[in-house]
Length: 310
Image (cartoon, rainbow, N blue to C red; front, side):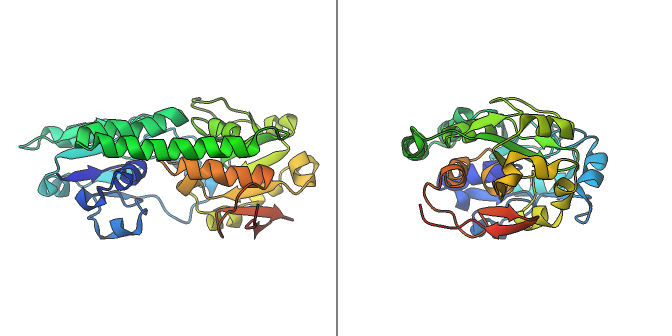
């Protein structure tokens, strides 16, 4: 069985099912687990890696989850790889090669692979993708076991934070313009013992004015830009800290602004979003531990590792 993944989250799911060895092709952004580095890359992007958040937004036509796809697809290489399955999505043309482009490329192949489009918008739907792929790949028992594993971890977090005061939490998935994190992120916050602000579970959000953040007065502010590693976020954090009223936010006054690893645990709808819930439980309530780089507390505009015991 040969699988081409055109979505980093799908690559995560394939690996979770123990089928990383069946990957015949991947995107240029698939970076987990480390072993996928050997898999041929079938996508690319013309986006300049040095662009600011505002410049990226203008390039894609607005901000994350909007505009035309920036990805190219090597259709010739895709044909040579002769996959049995191609995994894609139609949720966000800025996050991956568009479903339309994939369908067109597959249509001309002599032996058409099966195209599976993954469209989760909520946390249960994210974990449901394990079942979908497990059934398609003929490993339903393995998928069921892995799904139970992640669901059990969610329950464990909920029990650990039960009865604690629930802080009001704003999560931002883009810096300029300000863009609240929707889809499964509000559920992650809820499972971790917080009250999500600015977005609802499953919601495909839109940019908001900075005044909306000021008016929300979050107790905790999470900064997890789509596609940005924590180091990249920290380098551009002044886009937020220089805004009027920044220092008046309760989260800022109380030292509860955190930079998180968006691509690993919050932006991609794969099983590691559950690890994101565990990270949030530590951020919000000091429960459990986080590794270096998983959560950085912002102090005076500078990130500091939040690693500690709990």
